[in-house]
Length: 88
Image (cartoon, rainbow, N blue to C red; front, side, top):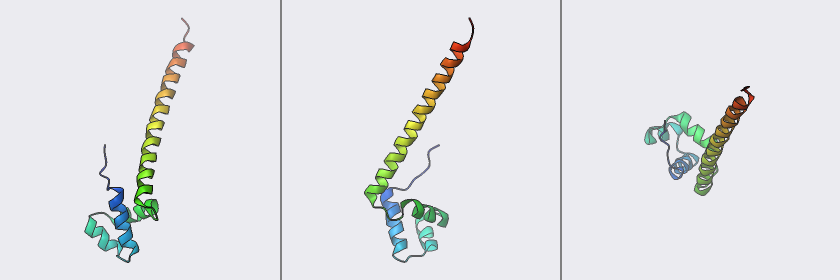
């Protein structure tokens, strides 16, 4: 299931507003997110530029793709091992 994600540019803009002195509750109401989401964004994207955030997202997507490939390979290897271990 695909989750709705804000663009990195928008998240960084919101965090900059927070750093400028806006209250988290006001920002949460303005952008229709929870305060917890704001703090999670701050933990993940705090102090980053837009290019760094985009790079982070690209690396996370690549990591997910590689994990899936590894899982597929391990499953295939286990199936082959099981097939070869049977006595004919």
